[in-house]
Amino acid sequence: MKARLTSYALAAVILLATWTFFVYRPLHRRHLRIITDTAEARHQLSDFAVVMSELHKLLKTREDLKSEESLVSSRLYTKEDLLKLFDTIEREAVQRRLTIKEISPPIDQLLYLNSLVPDSNEVQLLTITLRMQGGYVAFGQFVGYIEQSEYFRGVTACKVAGSRTGDAPLQLELAFSALLGGAGEAS
Image (tube, rainbow, N blue to C red):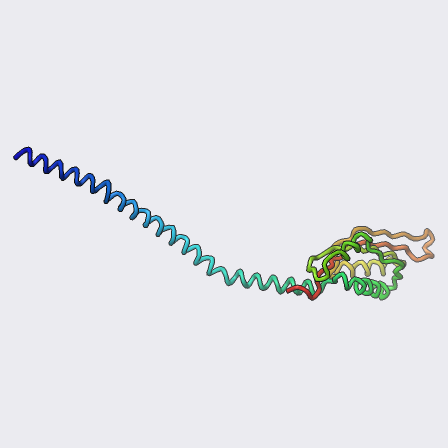
């Protein structure tokens, strides 16, 4: 009887060990993996909810930036409008009683502008050099106008020369960078 009880006990222990290693442990591991995956999915879902709640702000900001880009681009001169820019500069100089003797953008910059695709929205800088005659005050007013212009991006050179007696008009030179871009082409 004792031997039979021992064999039943041993069989029960073996059966329990077999059940533990082959049934319970894999089920327990799978259960833990499911809990971990569920926690990770909840975390990703909360991140997604945050992103979705901020999406309308992102889209609004994107639309605002597009409209601002369109507004700025509509005020810029394209390479086709370069002559209009020169006319505007000359008209402003004449209004201030300055005589423009020469407007000269560098030929290498003009060739580069000419090589670009006609419908390019790429913004380019062009150095414009103005040689003119006139007075100090008129020149100062003209430079102030240029600095306030949408296309102005900085003076690169300025030269004022005159006679010692002051009887001849001053020889003035102003070089500045002008911003050219896709006027009316922004989307």
